[in-house]
Length: 153
Image 1 (cartoon, one colour):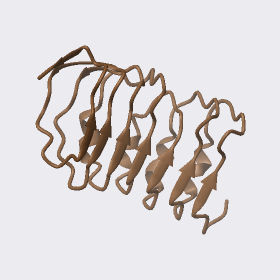
Image 2 (cartoon, rainbow, N blue to C red):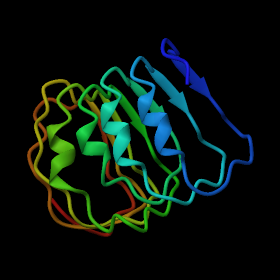
Image 3 (cartoon, one colour):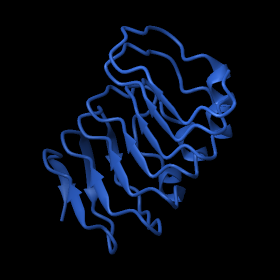
Image 4 (cartoon, rainbow, N blue to C red):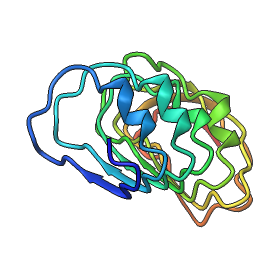
Protein backbone atom coordinates (compact mmCIF):
# COMPACT_ATOMS: atom_id res chain seq x y z
CA UNK A 1 0.00 0.00 0.00
CA UNK A 2 0.93 3.61 -0.33
CA UNK A 3 2.55 4.84 2.85
CA UNK A 4 1.62 8.52 2.39
CA UNK A 5 -1.91 8.14 0.98
CA UNK A 6 -4.17 10.82 2.51
CA UNK A 7 -7.45 10.29 0.60
CA UNK A 8 -9.08 7.07 -0.56
CA UNK A 9 -12.18 7.65 -2.70
CA UNK A 10 -13.86 4.45 -3.89
CA UNK A 11 -17.33 6.00 -4.07
CA UNK A 12 -19.85 4.09 -6.20
CA UNK A 13 -17.54 1.38 -7.53
CA UNK A 14 -19.87 -1.60 -7.01
CA UNK A 15 -17.48 -3.05 -4.44
CA UNK A 16 -18.84 -6.13 -2.68
CA UNK A 17 -17.95 -8.25 0.30
CA UNK A 18 -15.29 -7.71 2.91
CA UNK A 19 -12.98 -4.77 3.20
CA UNK A 20 -9.38 -5.95 3.09
CA UNK A 21 -7.67 -5.99 6.46
CA UNK A 22 -4.67 -4.33 4.80
CA UNK A 23 -6.55 -1.03 4.56
CA UNK A 24 -5.68 -0.57 8.22
CA UNK A 25 -2.06 -0.16 7.17
CA UNK A 26 -2.90 3.20 5.57
CA UNK A 27 -1.79 5.03 8.70
CA UNK A 28 -1.59 8.45 7.01
CA UNK A 29 -5.14 8.23 5.60
CA UNK A 30 -7.28 11.24 6.51
CA UNK A 31 -10.37 10.82 4.30
CA UNK A 32 -11.99 7.53 3.27
CA UNK A 33 -15.09 7.49 1.06
CA UNK A 34 -16.68 4.10 0.47
CA UNK A 35 -20.38 4.90 0.22
CA UNK A 36 -22.66 3.63 -2.55
CA UNK A 37 -21.01 0.21 -2.60
CA UNK A 38 -22.23 -3.12 -1.28
CA UNK A 39 -19.75 -3.75 1.51
CA UNK A 40 -21.40 -6.38 3.65
CA UNK A 41 -18.66 -7.36 6.08
CA UNK A 42 -17.36 -6.08 9.37
CA UNK A 43 -15.05 -3.13 9.65
CA UNK A 44 -11.63 -4.75 10.09
CA UNK A 45 -10.08 -4.34 13.53
CA UNK A 46 -6.97 -3.06 11.76
CA UNK A 47 -8.86 0.19 11.09
CA UNK A 48 -7.98 1.19 14.65
CA UNK A 49 -4.43 1.70 13.31
CA UNK A 50 -5.62 4.66 11.24
CA UNK A 51 -4.92 7.30 13.87
CA UNK A 52 -5.21 10.20 11.40
CA UNK A 53 -8.55 9.20 9.85
CA UNK A 54 -10.85 12.20 10.16
CA UNK A 55 -13.68 11.60 7.71
CA UNK A 56 -15.24 8.23 7.11
CA UNK A 57 -18.25 7.92 4.83
CA UNK A 58 -19.36 4.40 4.20
CA UNK A 59 -22.14 1.86 4.28
CA UNK A 60 -21.27 -1.04 6.55
CA UNK A 61 -23.18 -3.81 8.25
CA UNK A 62 -21.32 -3.58 11.56
CA UNK A 63 -19.60 -0.69 13.26
CA UNK A 64 -18.33 -2.20 16.50
CA UNK A 65 -14.69 -1.30 15.84
CA UNK A 66 -15.40 2.37 15.14
CA UNK A 67 -15.00 3.28 18.81
CA UNK A 68 -11.26 2.63 18.51
CA UNK A 69 -10.84 5.30 15.81
CA UNK A 70 -10.16 8.16 18.20
CA UNK A 71 -9.16 10.73 15.55
CA UNK A 72 -12.50 10.61 13.69
CA UNK A 73 -14.04 14.05 13.14
CA UNK A 74 -16.89 13.00 10.83
CA UNK A 75 -18.63 9.65 10.75
CA UNK A 76 -21.49 9.22 8.28
CA UNK A 77 -23.07 5.75 8.34
CA UNK A 78 -26.68 6.80 7.74
CA UNK A 79 -29.19 4.87 5.62
CA UNK A 80 -27.84 1.53 6.68
CA UNK A 81 -29.02 -1.65 8.25
CA UNK A 82 -26.36 -2.01 10.88
CA UNK A 83 -27.23 -5.62 11.60
CA UNK A 84 -24.26 -6.12 13.90
CA UNK A 85 -25.32 -3.11 15.91
CA UNK A 86 -28.80 -3.23 17.40
CA UNK A 87 -28.08 -0.53 19.97
CA UNK A 88 -25.88 2.52 20.03
CA UNK A 89 -22.72 1.51 21.85
CA UNK A 90 -21.85 3.71 24.81
CA UNK A 91 -18.26 3.62 23.54
CA UNK A 92 -19.32 6.03 20.75
CA UNK A 93 -19.22 8.66 23.47
CA UNK A 94 -15.47 8.16 23.80
CA UNK A 95 -14.75 9.51 20.30
CA UNK A 96 -13.48 12.78 21.75
CA UNK A 97 -12.71 14.49 18.42
CA UNK A 98 -16.01 13.61 16.73
CA UNK A 99 -17.90 16.66 15.46
CA UNK A 100 -20.51 15.03 13.19
CA UNK A 101 -22.23 11.66 13.60
CA UNK A 102 -24.96 10.43 11.24
CA UNK A 103 -26.58 7.10 12.08
CA UNK A 104 -30.01 8.04 10.77
CA UNK A 105 -32.18 5.35 9.19
CA UNK A 106 -29.81 2.62 10.38
CA UNK A 107 -32.15 0.10 12.02
CA UNK A 108 -31.01 1.05 15.54
CA UNK A 109 -33.01 0.35 18.68
CA UNK A 110 -32.53 0.77 22.42
CA UNK A 111 -31.68 3.83 24.45
CA UNK A 112 -29.59 6.79 23.37
CA UNK A 113 -26.40 6.53 25.44
CA UNK A 114 -25.26 9.45 27.52
CA UNK A 115 -22.13 10.82 25.94
CA UNK A 116 -20.39 14.15 26.25
CA UNK A 117 -17.43 14.25 23.89
CA UNK A 118 -15.50 17.50 23.87
CA UNK A 119 -16.36 18.51 20.30
CA UNK A 120 -19.56 16.58 19.47
CA UNK A 121 -21.93 19.17 18.00
CA UNK A 122 -24.03 17.52 15.24
CA UNK A 123 -25.93 14.25 15.76
CA UNK A 124 -28.46 12.64 13.41
CA UNK A 125 -30.30 9.59 14.80
CA UNK A 126 -33.64 10.04 13.04
CA UNK A 127 -35.69 7.20 11.53
CA UNK A 128 -34.62 4.50 13.98
CA UNK A 129 -36.39 2.62 16.77
CA UNK A 130 -34.71 4.35 19.71
CA UNK A 131 -36.58 4.43 23.01
CA UNK A 132 -36.40 5.57 26.61
CA UNK A 133 -35.53 8.92 28.13
CA UNK A 134 -33.27 11.41 26.38
CA UNK A 135 -29.91 12.10 28.01
CA UNK A 136 -28.67 15.67 28.44
CA UNK A 137 -26.97 17.05 25.32
CA UNK A 138 -25.21 20.21 26.59
CA UNK A 139 -22.75 20.90 23.75
CA UNK A 140 -24.74 19.86 20.74
CA UNK A 141 -25.73 22.51 18.22
CA UNK A 142 -27.83 20.28 15.95
CA UNK A 143 -29.67 17.20 17.14
CA UNK A 144 -32.16 15.26 14.99
CA UNK A 145 -33.97 12.46 16.80
CA UNK A 146 -37.20 12.64 14.78
CA UNK A 147 -39.12 9.51 13.80
CA UNK A 148 -38.16 7.56 16.91
CA UNK A 149 -41.63 6.93 18.37
CA UNK A 150 -40.36 5.36 21.60
CA UNK A 151 -38.30 8.34 22.80
CA UNK A 152 -39.50 10.16 25.92
CA UNK A 153 -38.89 13.82 26.61
